[in-house]
Amino acid sequence: MSPVISVRDLWKVFGPKAERVVGSEELTALSRRDLLKLTGCTAAVRDVTFDVAPGEVFVVMGLSGSGKSTLVRCLTRLIEPTAGAVVFDGEDIATVDERRLRELRRNKFAMVFQHFGLLPHRRVIENVAFGLEIRGVGKAARRNKAAEVVELVGLAGYEDAYPDELSGGMQQRVGLARALAVDPEVMLFDEPFSALDPLIRRDMQQEVIRLHREVGKTMVFITHDLSEALKLGDRILIMRDGDMVQIGTGDELVGAPADDYVADFVRDVPKANVLTLRWIMRPPKADDQLDGPELGPEVVVREATRAVLAAEKPVKVVADGELLGMVGDEEILAVIAGEPA
Image (cartoon, rainbow, N blue to C red):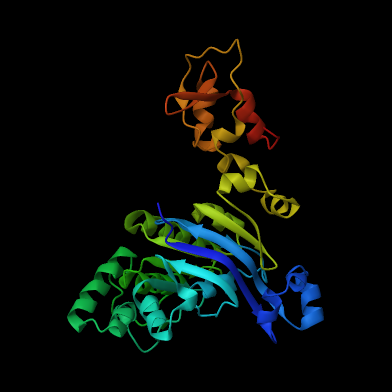
């Protein structure tokens, strides 16, 4: 399946004569600190390459200053990339003119920010319909669509409320509804829940999961929170100082961290909640009885624990009729106890 977005060799350098940095092997090899000291330039995004598949929730994660928010803004040229390509459905966004860029932003992309950006003098239904109004959709049609999306995000009954009458979580639901109302191909989230209280944040994460399940939109989600990344992401890109450190599924990051930086990130993650049986299964032994129960390799350890511990024989890990390995009490308990499997 062709990717919806292909990012290739993307750079964003802030500072004087930024283009010369990308064109110099000597300068691009410098650390962020040395580059700033020598040239007065900061490389916020450094040679980043990745694809986003249709319907995927692709999470970009990193600490403050890692370049993640700059990266997501480069995808729609809210920040102009210094070099590289951002290909959307075969078209390089980095090279289109302003008119085409406006069309793409209005019709193909929608962005949800940390700060809700709601219009305080407009009611909920009018805020949700705002993107459709900009498109020139008629009043009745946009109100009908807005009402449909308001119900979808759980705000039915609040259509005529003003933003300042709503809680932070409800305001963010309005932001979600406004993004969904224009029926974009890609939704971009820039740390949308980081200002919310923990319980409300958890509810909003569940809301994104539910909406993704129901509407199937391709999503690029920016966060500094590993638990949020693991909860939401089909795949996760970890960034540090503008560089890509590792890209993979949650179980790949936890099971095989690329370096000490990633290992530090995932050290406190409850592995049983993330690792799948593929990571803990052992090869079949000659004396194994192969008439025990079967589970798939992508079953999460936590979900498999009861079945494995209740079975009288080791569980077979099977995919497409092929025996991949075995999992017994020993493998399960090693993960639960936090020991190497």
